[in-house]
Structure formats: C-alpha cells, structure tokens
Image (cartoon, rainbow, N blue to C red; front, side, top):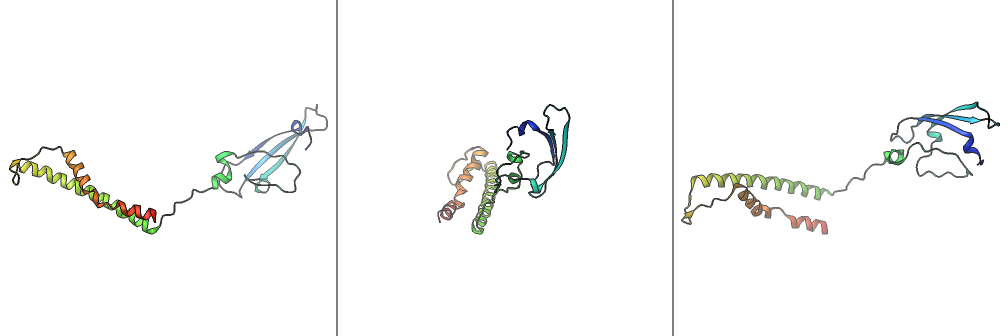
Length: 169
C-alpha cells in the first residue's frame, strides 16, 4: 500500500444498525480524497455503496490479495456472526425428561400431603388433649416443625437412586 495513503483518505460511513442477517447489509461510504497537491483545501468526495458484496464477515480470509484497506463497522457482540450464533440446546433423552416430570409430580404430591398431614395434626391437637394410647398429654410441637417433620419422613418416596443410576449408565 502507498505509505502516505492514511494521510490522503478521510471519510464517513453510514451503515444500517447491527442485525443478524448475514447477507443483508446496506450503507454509504463518503470518501474525501485530496488531489495531487496535498496543500489544496478542496477535497474531492466520492460516494460508494456498502453492501453484502463488499463486506467481509468475521473470520473471512482473503486470497490472492496483496493488500487492502478495511474499516471495522461491527465489532464484538454486534458482529453479524455473533448475532447470528444460536445457543446450543441441551439434548435430554425422553426417558430422563419423563423421569424429571415424574419427580416434579412427586415433589408436588409430597408437599400437598405434608400440608394435609400438618392440618390434620393441628386438628387432632385441638380435639385430643391426651394420647389415648400413651396416657400422656399430647405434645405441643410448633406447626412449622410438624410440617418439616413430615417432609423428612416422606422424602423417601423420591427415587434419587434411580436418577444416579441413569446418570452413571
């Protein structure tokens, strides 16, 4: 490239906003070049179209080219390649998906059963002040403690060993 080219070229680029369409780009390049006399105050303005034909996307390689002049218009996350990239979707087998649904259903069922048992315990506490089978006064445990006691007792219904077996296999 000519050594003094950067002193001779000045211009503006107007281009459309960043988007994910790889083959759609439109804009204008207004290039002001000084004449042969670098002291001339008047500059000649050339207007060129910027489109997909003269756009090099990120990762492009030019072949059979000694030199070129380029301008970066989209960079970072605004580059067309980055905006067009899709996140990888997780591949979950149908058996594992069904098992996850089954376990979620069990969590909900256990939660509802624990609420029912806690309400039943609170009702029984009000009606029976003495345990008939023990002959002693009924305990005055807190309702929240009773709820979590039932959660601990019923969590054996959730087949965690089955999940571990599927992960290992």
